[in-house]
Length: 496
Image (cartoon, rainbow, N blue to C red; front, side, top):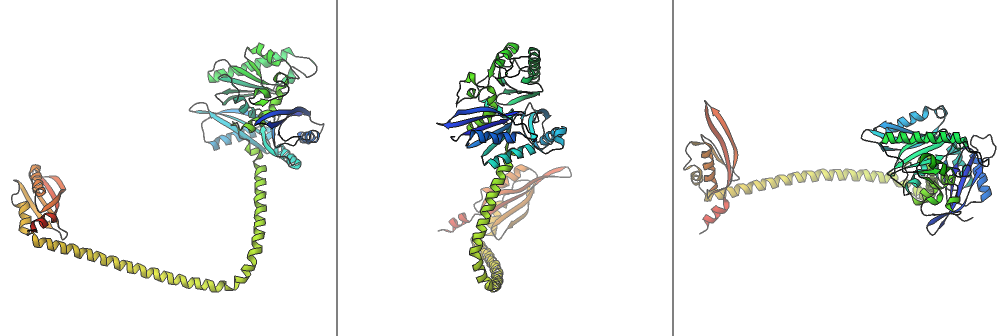
């Protein structure tokens, strides 16, 4: 058997399978069928059926995709107020553990969520027993076949449904033996999910030709109520199309009957309906039930984005493989390293104490050198500071030799504006000039500032402060002006 992809769906009484080959970048249906479970008292009879499938068909798949579609798989929908992811998961766990079947057994669960509006979020989740998942993983481990994914139907059909070209709002109806699942897709999002306790066995049986019209009518009425509930919740118009998955052998013309009852286009969802899939026989002869096995395979091959991540179901299997490989590699590396290092270690063990003592002595010398270096750096900085101060004083003295104090003072105080008095006048060793005083008018202060700015011996004049004060109902201004001696101008005057 050529290599290819194998899809399996495990139902209550049987499993369905499809085997597809890769040809020129596309998938081609090679074989498909249904295999009943053997009579057994085992808790999970699908395990022996899987083994029988590989014994009979001699498949050699590259990848295997398995999904559960059973009555004991929990599928549910919640509408919650917006909350953090951790709180959503707590709510989901609480809802699952409410059921007696799940309250006393370990389980795995997955979920998806999307915003309904600014305050609400829609959550759809599925759960199944951990024991069943572990049994399935052990089965494939014993068969030594690559298990790529374990998923829960019918939620895993959504990526395939999104790939179809339909209307704005399209429903997916999966009719199983004892259950019906309804999902509504809107803008590539599963915005509505509903499960009922009625299935195809309620109104039709394969091979008998009997069809219970009353039971079928009750089933269609229930579908109408579901679609009406969706329309009320989302303020929506009529459903544009229904994609139907059912066992065609039990009800060959169910799609036509459903169309007559609902007056909505009904599309049998077959493998050929999914773009890029070659099929034999022709689409109209195919059983839509095979889509349950093929859709996860096709989604994985095409890498379609999924609403739900099923990593928790196979994460442990992949994680164990990776860990075992890492441990094995580490042990081999350690063994090889020990064989090389041990002789060297024993040879140099005698010198360890001597090397340690030399290291300590070097550390003491290094710390001593670092201390001396810091002291020398401090002394050097002090000498540089003294040198800069002496140079500044020398420059100032040289400048004072060329400029008389009388001239400096006369430049700024010879003709003071009326109503202005100087309270202090100083010149620092760096050549900074400071004038402080009081004035009855701010115009007098401005006039003094212009005199300083126009002075030939001063430059860079600016206000240090200017404040308004009041004494005995008299308002006056206290000011401070700073400037520096203009060395360039004095040097130009000193030239012949």
